[in-house]
Structures are given as structure tokens and as C-alpha cells.
Length: 291
Image 1 (cartoon, helix red, strand yellow):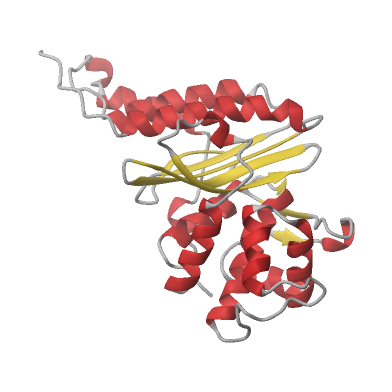
Image 2: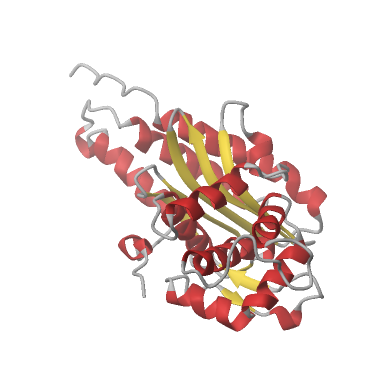
């Protein structure tokens, strides 16, 4: 069993107070010192404040995990709260399928039963187009219980599959922002899969055709390799934000919506705030003020 890198980030609490404390400490605390706060800390405070405001606009709950380029936790909110995963389950399923390929238990050129597509083709449309039929067929082929056991073995212990409660091509399951962010972080580090399988899955995420959520708030120079999840009352987006050669993992999960139309503008606002953080964290440090 692999040890999840999430263990080093255990004990998550509300981040806003911590971020403010860091900022006060960097600025000299009670003494009113003159040391300027590092740009990343200042940007994290601004983002935490903005996300708390945005959380008030979510009818249900907002869960967020944001990791910096080294995998350090920038902020977390409801990181371990279970959400109906919608199509985010396809990230964990793709991991299971590609692990089978890495071990030689199947080939990417194999035909997927019931589907008329190869394994590689099914993974492509499942991730880049969020095709439900491909996800359901791959899951039935591997076995849903086996996919869940594999996820738990890999350290994603809060992620569960319950296809019996869904419709024919829509699998009901739960996951957490922490599990999703951990998978993406370990994927980009090359810790989950072989080099070729890592490149293949990242390529599918980069080719994402469903850009209605966080990416709708990003500027053209921001890259986003990601996966969305959408049901009537659930809307999620998670991926790797790339800017200036630096990558940040973000997982944003929400519920309680009346429909997609209600959630879409909110995600655009959230995307703009996340981009502002990334740009602010990369800004040159301000010189310290004179005493």
C-alpha cells in the first residue's frame, strides 16, 4: 500500500485564520515591524478571504484544496467532507485502468466489452469529453468493487463507488477535495503510474473540452489540465493550473445548486480569484519598508 502524500498535510482546519496569522507575523505582529509579507502569503490571505465570500453564494457546501508547485497546502476548506463526485470518479477509474495496463493485465489496444472502443479510446473520451458510457463500461469491465478496493489501497480512502444507486450510464459515488487533489498531485509527480501512462492521462486532461467551470474565469495564458463533474445539484472542477512554468493543483467541489445555469457564473468568479492568487504568488517580493 502506498503512503499518501496527504499524510504530511493532515489535520486541516479553516485556513483564513492561519493565513491572517502568517501575514501578521510576517509584518512584525504587535511591534508593527517593517518586514513585508512574502507575496505568496499575501496572495493566500486575499484568496482565503475571497473564497469565504464565495462560499456564502454556494447553496450547499464549498470544498477546496489548493496545492503549490511543491505540493504544499496553500489552503483547504471542507477538504475531508464527502461530496457526490459526479464525473470526478473518472479520475480514479482512469488511474485503475492505467495501472492495469502498466502491470500488463490489459493493453491500451484491447477492445472494451460492450463499447466498441479500445481502452485508450475509451479513456480519451471518458476524460476529455466526460463520456458516461465509456466510464460505465470500463468500470463494469474492471469491477466496481475492485476499482474501489484499488483506490483505497492507493490511499484514497474517502473515495467510494456505488453504481447500484445510479442510472445505467451514470455511476453514483463520493469523494473529497483532499482525495482529488492528492491524486492530481501524485499524478503530476509521476508517483501513480509509469511515465507513458502519466503522460497519456495528463494529455487527456489537457485536451479537456468541457471548459464551463473554473477555466471560464482564466486568462488565455493560463493552462488548465482538468476534469469537471456535473449533476443537477452538484458542480465540480479539479486540475493543474499552469502559469509561467509553475503548476498548482486545485480541487473545487460544490453542491446544493438548482441546475448548471446557477453554478456556472460562480465558477467563473472562483477561477478569477484562483488566477489572481497564482499571479500574486509569482510576483516579485516587495522591498521592506524603512524603519
